[in-house]
Length: 328
Image 1 (cartoon, rainbow, N blue to C red):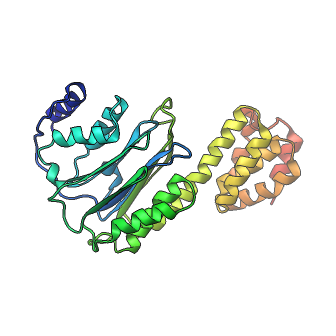
Image 2 (cartoon, helix red, strand yellow):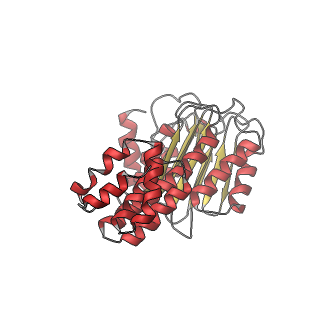
Image 3 (cartoon, rainbow, N blue to C red):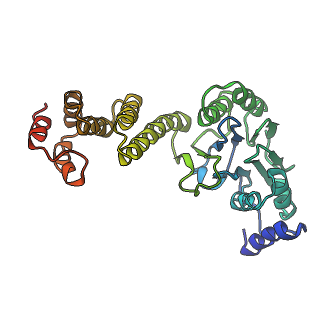
């Protein structure tokens, strides 16, 4: 995509005039995706799976409080940042997509889905997208697919998303799993990605990312994406625990670290920090079995725990440290 097209597309925002794009379409990169906004939380997200290396690096785009974009088929990645720029400036998803398509002389090979922070959705499938292709627009979500083995993929995705329980990330993943269950990509599967952002526009792009996951190259990307989603939720709890610690909300931090540990019970890091928080809160007897587990799984925690008092993360108490190091 030429630099000229970038500035011409931005000119659409200012003038409303239609312009033609330069450049050639690329080969088809993507297969199926979903973009959606959760009306209950305001979260906005996009998820995709493909038989193509690192599909997430080109297809998925989202910005807190602005919107989300999936750009695929003969993919033009600029639809992502330009679509978000147009929505950020006040265009809704439909207006943004219309403007970009008007500026693209290869719109007939594009496939795009967009949703904005108000739940307005838009999608487009060019006539030259490779069969089987489809798209379905629902309430605050749209699904789109090309290069499918069967024509039922979009129907399966939409039905699964509508009926799914859980947070937005869970519902997006259930939709991808339904697509795979309906036949998926005619070429097979290789990579997947998910990006979920806050509905709070005041957050910076890096601060408003709730889930940001990519499986670049794997024989079974969706099971790995589900594993990573569990891990991401656990680390979000760890981050929440850190925030509580900085505010001296020890009990809340203990609860957050404990919930993270329960979610990923084989993570020695989560076990260790849960233990350290308990010990720092004076709940030493509760912490010792956790320290023992962490030390057994990764012996270098014994070294690290001795460094924590200097950073204020444990009391400078030799008796306490002796108790911790005596665990086995």
